[in-house]
Length: 110
Image (cartoon, rainbow, N blue to C red):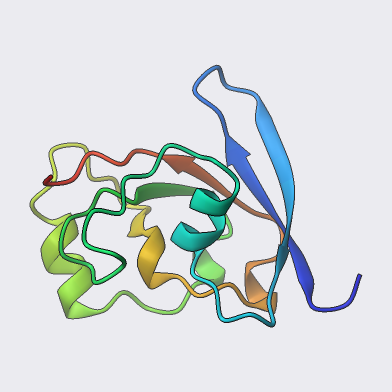
């Protein structure tokens, strides 16, 4: 289908769910995951202030836009940061993210 990508989510049990995501609605990865009933608090509403939408990008990290200073500052406060950590609220769905695989870590400040 046109204007859609596949987003893969690694579940807590290690299985991977593949979801079809629209790229023409201006959604962030956080909004998309919440809309698909994944357990993301998104306490700050997508302002990169709480890190409750922390994800690890297992596949496709190299296709993402560079991390902003604000996003890095928030991630840098987390205990389980990885070299592939991102805030899902800061990742707008687009064609370069097709077949991205993420694992929800969501351990931010509430």
